[in-house]
Length: 441
Image (cartoon, rainbow, N blue to C red; front, side, top):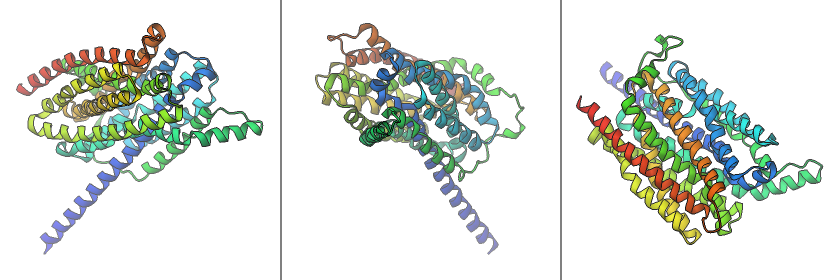
């Protein structure tokens, strides 16, 4: 009887743990969605912000990418170390407060410098999101289920990026009406500023949700770590021949993804006569549906290939995606109408979505458990500087330099990203060789 009771208690505890793990993934999904909403919200307001603050396309590219990534990069290693050694839930809650306040502060900007500083605050706060989530998911799920859980978490990237466009596009008439009423009352506030102020609400909801998240036992004794333990950096240097081609290849894939997200709405507005609301709702819904499906599918396929061929099989999935992404960019570059642009965008978004999940998930395979926070932060420096910052800014400056009536933005977007994907393919081939050599040893 006692053995039966012990077995029942064990089953009950296992069920409670599984339920808690699912709740944590759901909470992290919502937080990820809000984070990308705050990050991508400028995309829909390129034209009004340019007019209000007197910025160029290149400067708007910097606001969408470099301003965020500069702080993200500087803060990342320090926050990664905190993630490895402190309560991850509390670190994440503090950083949510920082990025939400900074997103709202963007609405007070009256020149490029002020907007740049506010966007840096968003980047500093969001530096904790992926390292903390990856570390928590790795401790809540074993390696055979980790990809599916992380894939669901990463659907928040596309839900946030896509829904930020769709929801704001849907709400724009109401915001315009509110701005008109405030102006009539002697308080002239532009619509884009009101949207920025509203970013405080979802951040507060995220912090409230984290109250119910429990810190899981770690896969290593974090409490024994020295206060200034930088073992993750040493582990990264030890594996530099693998980590550099891995990080740079996925950074170039991220470049293409952020270039697309940052400029396709503008392509629809400038080249195909879409209104801002129409462009936001159309592209936002497409990105949310295609991206979420691709992110989840990437986790599932990655787990399957990992069971078959280990870390090499998981990373190989990303290499298979690149020809499909290239076909999508070629379609965008040559598209004669908006429908073809959206079809090409759907194809490349699906392929890049799967590949980007593999990039982050493979860190959990390749990095030692004690160093996941720090090594994932180093990975995010590469994807941030090259991808998040480089993608939007390079396309913006390319259009400033070479854009012309016979050389539309869509053509430049497609050609630049095709060249970048070629470099990513070469580096992935090198990375796969290093993983195979490590496995043989």
